[in-house]
Image 1 (tube, helix red, strand yellow):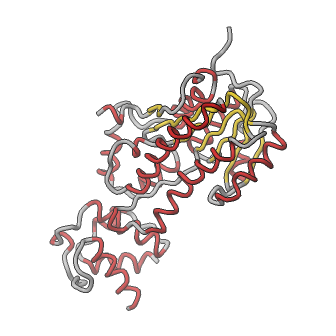
Image 2 (cartoon, rainbow over the protein chains, first blue to last red):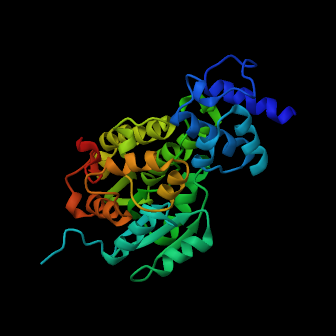
Image 3 (tube, each protein chain N blue to C red):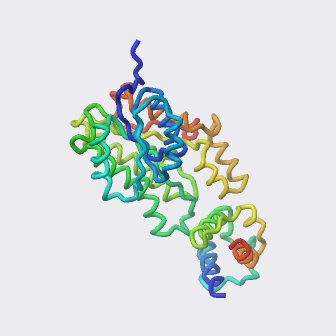
Length: 76
Length: 252
């Protein structure tokens, strides 16, 4: 899905890994730069680009990159 | 006994009048006798503030302050009706919780435009002939974010620090005109801005912010008190200052 690839690149940027290197199955707690500030960044990005206000608790409940993508898809 | 906070017969323009610190400032200034020009984008919300004011002669002005070019002419139009102003309070502003990794030039520009650009253009407009009377006062609403670092809000912090520099430079430039220019530097106060920020934070992150205020999260009226002090004769020998009103946030 074209939309997902854009969101996936944004997540790459957020956790500071080269674009295209992040797998949807990747576990968030295994990513070195996924932290509380990333939660804020993800929230800001999704709000700015999709007009969706996610709750930080729902983001912190996500285990994988795929969970993040699904959360946004369900919230749209 | 004369009251150094008395603003009887003076007109003061307040931006961001429909919520938070701006709204509370309008209410306080009206009880001190001022005629208030309430500025904001939403007429219905401004009128709600207007209805809560004490005294008469208050004016609602619907205007989008991001139209920076139009501010000087717009203020001339207002003061043609109200007469010269004795004060301006720039309480309008936006918060942005965006970590540096996600910051865009557009977001940065948006935050700086309303928080700093509008302040600078209001000051420029205020100094025009017939827009301000001698012995008048400008107050910008800065923030502790401008003097104490906090992750995730760099654009907002930059804008609020800029207001302190802006006030100091203008204080020098406007002193010969007998216009004083100061900032209040609030910590977090209850209101819509805090609630929007809270919605972006985990409970732990929010508790950490609360814990930064030894006296607890403030009320908009706590900040309005500082603004009134700087506007009135009580602040008559104060210019270029940044009055910290933060429940102890920056005392750490």
